[in-house]
Length: 212
Image 1 (cartoon, rainbow, N blue to C red):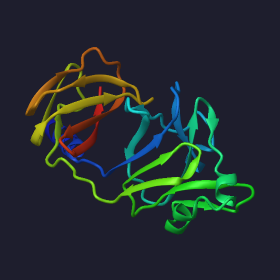
Image 2: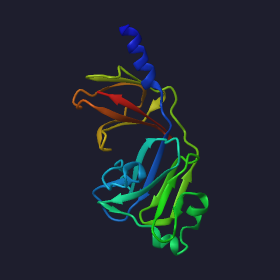
Image 3: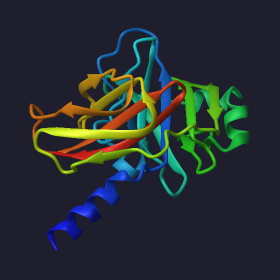
Image 4: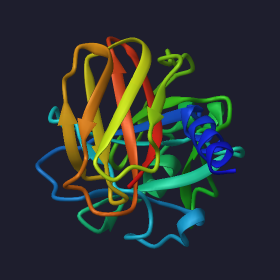
């Protein structure tokens, strides 16, 4: 029975869920960037934290929802307001594509649709919209043992350029450049909990979960 349970765990965490990247361009040097929306009760601190890409953009990587998702960006606890932009006719592309919904008076919300994958926008600007509907995913990714207490072995269908482990706040807690398709990581210094492991190989990527 113990071996069956272990096999179920391995199979469960070798499956790579479809991922989306939501990226926002920001002028200046913000301290925190997050998402908010109905799923998080429009709480400025309730949504997922974005990761600083170091080039003026910040990205939230998350499992693809199974329904359209409304959201807005929150930079240093200030939620963007797109109402005036929309009422001024600056958002026709986003509105026509369904990536912005508004009454032009009281609210204007960004929308990720189930037909989208990667979206890049600019904070406070609904005329800036870049969509990508093609995602190259690294195949055959496995992590084991999972859960683990010290080392985790990662295997993929191709050589991994970069692996990053994120905690639940979106903070990178471990980073490595293995340049191999099969390698081990020492995670003994991580606290117990659930982490996201993001793998990159050229233009391809994959994200899966790790339990410590």
